[in-house]
Amino acid sequence: MRKWLVLFAATCFAATWPASQSTPPGEPPREWIDPATGHRVVRLSREAGTASLYFHQNPYTAKGDIFVVTTPTGVSTINLKTREIRQVVEGRVSGIIVGRKTRRVFYRRENSVLATDLDTGNTREIAKLPANLRGGSGLAVNADETLLAGSAVVGSQSAEERARQAYAASGGGLAARLALRLPMVLFVINIGTGEVTTFHHATDWLNHVQMSPRDPNLIMFCHEGPWHLVDRIWTIRADGSNLKKIHSRTMDMEIWGHEFFSQDGRVIWYDLQTPRGKEFWLAGYEVNTGRQYKYRVERQHWSVHYNASPDGKLFAGDGGGPNSVAAPGNGQWIYLFRTRVDHLEAERLVNLEKHDYHLEPNVSFTPDGKWIVFRSNMHGPTHVYAVEVQKAK
Image 1 (spheres, rainbow, N blue to C red):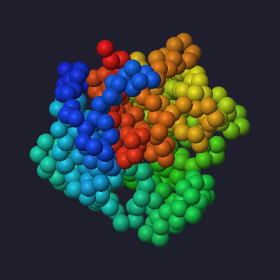
Image 2: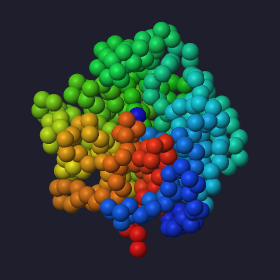
Image 3: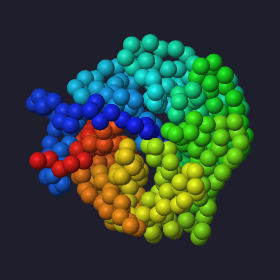
Image 4: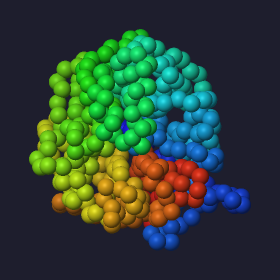
């Protein structure tokens, strides 16, 4: 339930993409100016069912020229200068994340952890996870691309199956899965040697493992479950030391989550509500100093996920549906946010009135900060789109 580079080359992403050809009948438009906002939107994908990665999974190469997406048949790249699309991985895989140094995408196929070069297509198996490590979160890659990290359920296949059945029986509810208290563990994989090391054994539901874009040995993870029942955000060192809780509850039903690192790794940002569904904030925790930030978010601007621009000066949000935690009154938009003294000033970029929020848009900024990429079913099938931060001239 993953995007982090410290520096990007601003010249590698064209300010204006090549003019698109006419749209074939029955396909979503390839490009338009949103009449409600004046911002230009383009469709990056061609195949229905194409989706961008989860919001904190880095999809961009270090040069910023390539963007990784999933398709119905595997994993593909989209060239952000030419819009050329090329498949690089065939078949169903999980835990997808792009490295911050080399041009490799990392992923899991069952218990195998693999890496594929995005230019050559060459693939190698990095490691096989032990047979007793199953399920868990996707992969995270560290700042110098020497370690991968994740979480897993410890035990037989029946334990993992119980978790899936409980989740399905509850209609996707988090409480049933949390109540199982399955044994779990964090792990790291040495990318060079394939060595797998486990640590932090727990019966908490360990999820959303991320690694700092700045500190190669800093891991962030969450206690998953209904947010009012868990202390959500934690950090730990890659050797299992220095476990730290990032936020503590100050009132009944206070909730926080959907945490992510700033792209320079200095701040952990997260959605904070005091209490749930009443007051909304984008909150931050400065990793090295413990300094805290709180920016008020108006109800109509609350978003399922937020993300930060490469320079840290802007934020994006993907709005929320009619059944979201901010309903009634939440807006179905892609938002751009500018920080003010104590609040976020919102600008609407894309009208998502026709988007079904069972599919989360999962916004991310392109490496040059000029576009916000998201996935949407606003025209029926799922596609990947980008909206220009500056209004069209």
